Amino acid sequence: MNRTRTIRHLWIFSLVALGIGWLGVGLDSQLPDQQKEETLGMAVWLITPLLLVIFLRTFFGDGWKDAGLHPRLSSQWKWYVIAFLIFPVVTLFTMGVGALSGWVDFTPFDAGAYFSTFVILLGINLLKNVFEESVWRGYLTVKLIGLNMGDLGIYLIAGLLWGLWHLPYYLEFLPEEAMYTVLPVSEGLFAAIAVVNMLVWTVMFTEIFRLTGSVWSVVLLHAVEDAVINHLVIDGFVVLQPGTEIILSPICGILPTLLYLLIGLWLRTMRMRQESRKANPLN
Image (cartoon, rainbow, N blue to C red; front, side, top):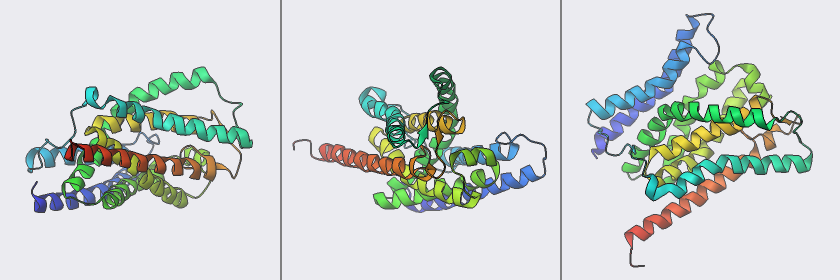
């Protein structure tokens, strides 16, 4: 890896990623009467980072060897299973706490409607998250790893950039009514909580990626997240008692966020053991 080139490209990537959403917001301001979450500006925000990564890898010397495009499913299948289960298990546990405390109303829950929509959303998000994970794990994270950066630095830089890239989405593209079903706070506070949430999730996402060496494992992890927890809350299958959302919300509550952090740190421990065995095969 050419260290100077990598650092230069990471600066370019970061500046484009942090600015493109606001360019999309400006574009939408000139194109009224678009449907929320289906605007041209949002498409520009979502697709541009991937296009930049393709250009940097194809034409500017970054190459494709470290992109993690090989699934490695036969050797790393157990981590794929774990990637599939993390969000459902934590959500089930959190909702169990909600049931015991009486803070969650399950009356609207319709199992048939929920799981049929889950299957549809999973398929859609497997495709959508190729765009996102090829960028944030398959490019940014792997380049930070290549610079021999420490784990905390990787989590902070990748997590902050990932979170800050989302700011135009939370502040402009996301409909207010969808935001209020998750957490009834101001847009600014919601965005700040979401960035912190993504910082925590970055530990899990990074470690699943490093354990498997494949971007497809985090595509799966991210797709399951989108299909399980967003759908559960935003579509009203469960209703949290007012004031308890900050604790129990499957999307951004304190309890599930702490559990995701613990899982991420456990995955880090597993990855370090795996690396130690490879470095000392006779031990």
